[in-house]
Image (cartoon, rainbow, N blue to C red; front, side, top):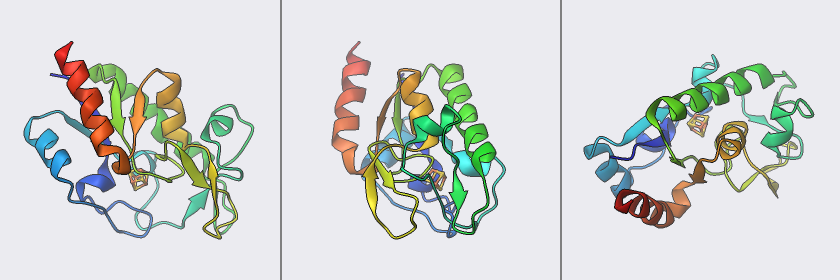
Length: 163
Ligand code: SF4
């Protein structure tokens, strides 16, 4: 059975920067019941506390963080790049350990966002981009979806199951 990597906050785990969580999502519960879900919060895995100050990537591109071209900064200006990269590498290790090809990650997170991100101004402005973990998983060939793409994720999973 194909396993999937899932952002912990989408499973109701209160690991968001503000101590919150998301869900429940019916499809996710089904995948949990099937034993497919490998859960990770990259920021907590990288050593950050909960709650924690919000962080953004100036310009929103996690791939540039991986290349050492951009930092991840908290709203207080603290550089938390190392923790974000550490969490992304732990996500990649899990993907390799479990042979994972699909991930369901939280939209618009500086770690997990797959399509867009906040722009680093902490104003709520969005830009096209991705979080650090999403960028690293994409580089490794993992297809990354967010919680607003559950049906597309289900379709991709069904295709993988069908072999
Ligand atoms: Fe953790 Fe990702 Fe959820 Fe942020 S979006 S709380 S890094 S799992």
